[in-house]
Length: 98
Image (cartoon, rainbow, N blue to C red; front, side):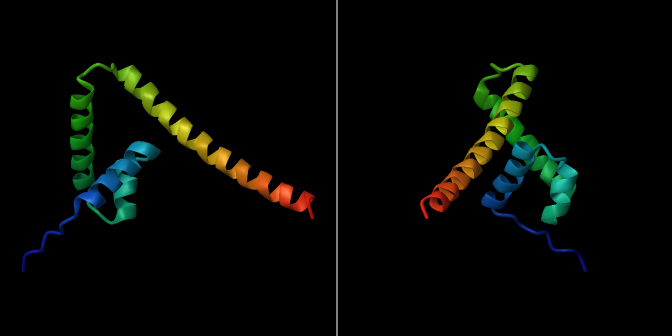
């Protein structure tokens, strides 16, 4: 009996591509974690990259794209650190006012 093809909704596809794009983890690793075929995820990521480069109008060079990606990752990390610090200050103020 032939194996039935699994269908993934667009939200799942977008989320999987976003994980690869924002974390910089290898496609193979993300595919294993999500339980999908590596080739399938690779196709989704490739389509996303093509769509994004078309949206850029080809204005960014390869090094500029790499820098933009690096800066976006750094920005996300700094935002998380800021949020942790905000929470710790709130706890510290509560302790000090007791």
